[in-house]
Length: 440
Image (cartoon, rainbow, N blue to C red; front, side, top):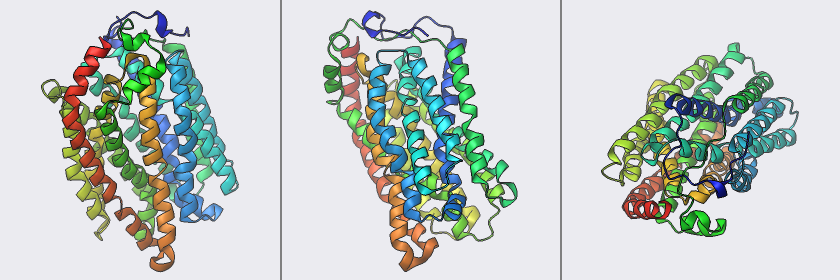
């Protein structure tokens, strides 16, 4: 596809003239790609008990695999890739990235040691670095700012749907308790290559929206980045979603381990299907509803971008904490479902604000920097923290209680997230108005 040079674009901050059908098709394809992103990201957490038994790993090693080994290059490379996405074809970048992370996921199934699996996870992270920043930029060029929270909430449905599909695929290939985790890795990795081809053949690089004649658009990129990093509510939203996602990533990658240990004789196939349904309904419903509520309330009160996520987590965080303390499996899963539903509320508003507040010239970079902070704290920190802490507690408390104690500490980042969302809500109206003046 022909690249789109921002220097020659002269549009305003409204979408180019494309049909609603095509615009929605592009959103659907990008959402599907994001789902594959989370299939390949989540699968190691689902297969964790089988990988641990097969390769003889401890909780700390599992934590490194689920967290920092994946997150480090994924996070760092997102910034130079976003720089490219703000200048060249975003469609090509997403297609190449999807091919890379899918291939490395399949290669994970060939790993025979901790080191080999760690290298494959690093490769998955390298590929996934080129997924979201260009996709966010594309969506923002197809939808006006008043509808971006809804559009990016739909895109964010790739998270629960991807997790759901990862659970379903694992249940299918592990039916009967057969711990053939390698086949699952290969089976979920290879289809992504075909999806990359579909993207390349059916989606064209969209024209850049935004008034490229404004000072912020015509200035040097570092000036635009400096302006971006001076926005209080950008930082507030960034830390708020990071603290919340610290908990979510830790839970999603350690949930199977906890329930398998705490409930002996658990029917793993049936349990995976139940968790898949919950993610595809409750979590997805929260993601969608959060975007809808903010789009409507945000028209009259910009603070809604922070208030809606904060109020939702006020309900969800306590439910999660008590889910770890109850003995009933059914009651515990019900409480976890409440957390998944309410934590989904912050995705659309957070990503929409990152795009709307950003200077036009650095929209992809805004998402990359957003993800840099988010993933170093959440994706790199959450799963790794739980694994290391659980390993530390194991000798004194045993494998079940050590993991329960470790997961209970996640109440702290959820409280920090709530505080950060409320703080952000105070600063959004002024920053939004400044962005409208800056971007034209």
